[in-house]
Length: 200
Length: 315
Image (cartoon, rainbow over all chains, first blue to last red; front, side):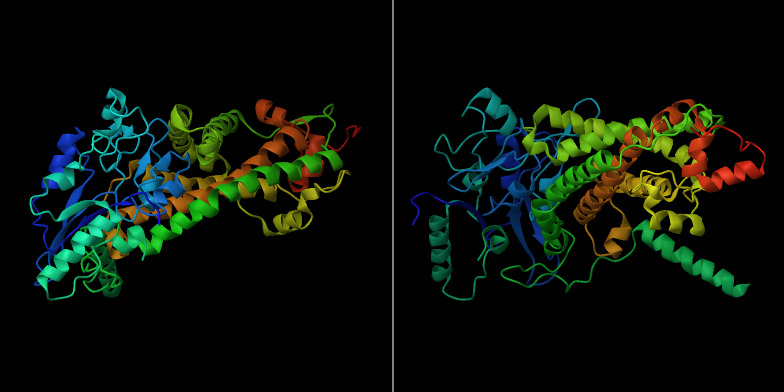
């Protein structure tokens, strides 16, 4: 067994109340430009009785992340705890990671005088980027590095119903199991998107 | 008459539906049922629904094939021509004989503008494809912008290019099949009378690749450049915007390979394989001697029109 944590996101769609708080908190914490949301709350099966649910989606920091594989300039790197990050000084903004992503996570802010597609921006699980940790440069390019400060990523930290969890895979699984057993009935399916992001 | 009217009306309503976006979205029960996926509607999570269809295909091709195939074509085609140059060498024709104006001024200007756009587009495309060996960053990013600027030039010259040469480039079955059968006589040092009009089958191949392939490149490249648009046609095909981008990237890469191969061929032919070929596109004149052998049908046509005479020294 590896002694490293394997960081994962989990959004409990039985608890998510579609409040958009995570998305707003993220945008504020990282001072994202208008039009960029690293995290999105989506309402699915809207109006279909008994099937309507909402969930919060951002970069899932996949195992064998497809974005990392398709990048033509190899600007991605995966930390030992599984967080998928990229180097904005190397990224050329070609958009291939968006095409490869199953979650629509990569975003492309408009850049420069001609308003062309700039370099990619995505959820960093509040772990900054390759620039010097907690430097102004890192903060400007990637937002806060809360992980380095020992804080929980801001989206999960502020989630009012604690639907959105983030942390080591085993810890998240434990909470998830406890929730199911305390409910004592019904079958909880695999969280939305997990099989795509982390395999079976 | 009534039937035609009805038919027109039918087409129009279909057209209106497709363009105006009133085509209904995918039916509710085509969502993936695997694992914990409870999705039933395709409207909201745009990327996820069809990931297995196009997302995985794009990822597979980009990870395993595109870069490899580009490398094989780039190195392979250059190598083949290097060997050809060493073994067979250039074709040399007598320049001290009468010359005929083959490319008037306008054609040459159009050609060189198109050439400029290709010189901007092709290398920058390769720089992006092999960006990881160049370290990415500002250099590759600027190449990406030059790729777009070259495209604007190509779009401007696209219609004139088509217009000036389309008639001469129409296929003539008799000459072209024979030309392809003998590979244009390029596997031979000797001067053979090659069946070809003003343009031979190889030149026609390159022209149609540049026009039709170029058109496909403009459309797919434009889709990837503008990225964000919504056409009802996509919904009819049960595709999301991002699927169109994925398909565009796949088509753009494969078409790019074909264009790259023929672009290198064109460079080799004009710069190395036929002496004086580059000069003819600068001055517009080709020697009668060259026309007699490389464009024999064109030569015979000029003879019959009495625009040239047969009495000149061949060597």
